[in-house]
Length: 161
Image (cartoon, rainbow, N blue to C red; front, side, top):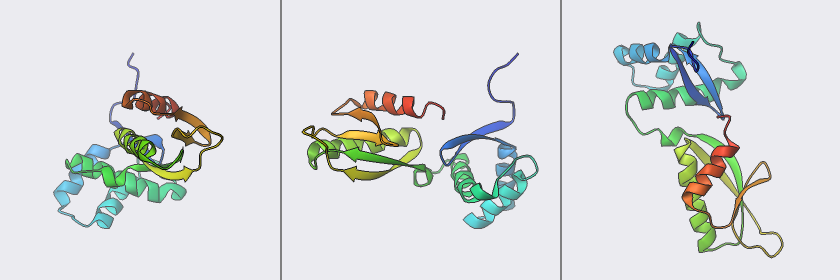
């Protein structure tokens, strides 16, 4: 017995959730063959092609449109970074080079998860000026950490993805 996703199902990131989509490759092939070039027409057609085999909630339609466009660009071998899912984070720490380096690494690490952090800067509390990453007000890491440790900490936080 096989474990994992069923055959013919592609997992894609819709907002911040992994969702299984049936028939994605076939839909992309049909779009390629159609000659369409307009983004809105392409995403309309993809959603139309996927509607019978997949549930697309009306409340999530825009998130699906963005995700499906991103996956179509990936299918074509194009840059998808503009369409990464956004995640809100806070960075606490004193303004300066240490925080700037922390943020640069943070942005790069989130990019590896195909996420784009929307950063809110927060003043340090107490006497600890070290940069700190917070998600939902929970501390993920504090202080100058290696890229590998930051990636591991973020990965643990989003492990259900």
